[in-house]
Length: 289
Image (cartoon, rainbow, N blue to C red; front, side, top):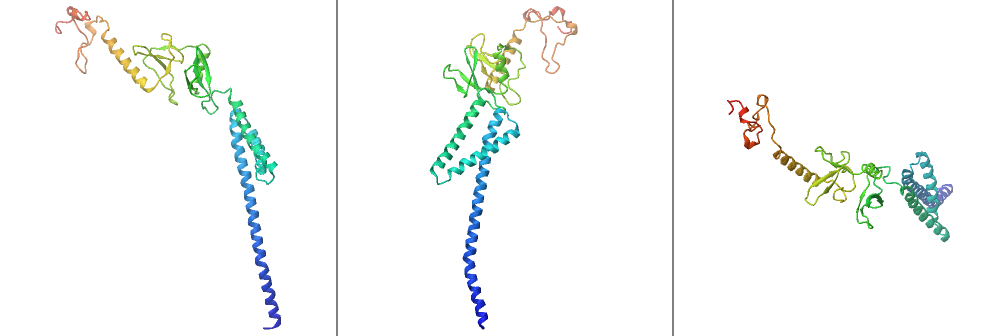
């Protein structure tokens, strides 16, 4: 091997020995840089998603324009990114500012939502935000369904179907007794009760078309349930049978009357004084007597 070949080989070996650590450092630096970029992008992505959820509830409550809501989302995302960036620093004062800023954003969000929903009874999505109860003859609203601690009366959720009836009651309308047989008890769209009832001491059920109080007993009316519908239907059937038994007989014209049921053969009219003369025996044709 010539001196020239040896020199070239030595130079190549030196280059290789120098390149390996340089390449390792370059690759490590590239990976670190890529990781920093990914963390930065993820931080901004999560800041935007948080801001989006932050603003979406506010925009629904205040019925904001979609483009205005998007602009507010971007601004809130920048503020969140600024505060979150301060949290992950080695400067104590900046960390304190970042943590305080995030807490302030959470508190402000809750306060804004409270201000926006305070006058609302039902949300724009149709969710119940308030419950109602009677304080004397006045309708009052509470924040949570259950029982009102001051009156002890049940506080029932206000739904979009119930709200117009509450407004009718507040405008002066009062519950009226329902005495027809064809009653629709529940809203066909969501199963909400649209009939109220009261129960007398003897167990009889009285139906009303509005919430409020029974004008006879003074008890608060209760929304109908499936069990009460069954009980009322049994009561109505018993009333019908009793009415049929107590019906006063009426005289009929034998020349144009049907005396027997064409399907069962049961008699439809009766004769004689014992039947209160619904049909006098003297007026019945000879071939029937």
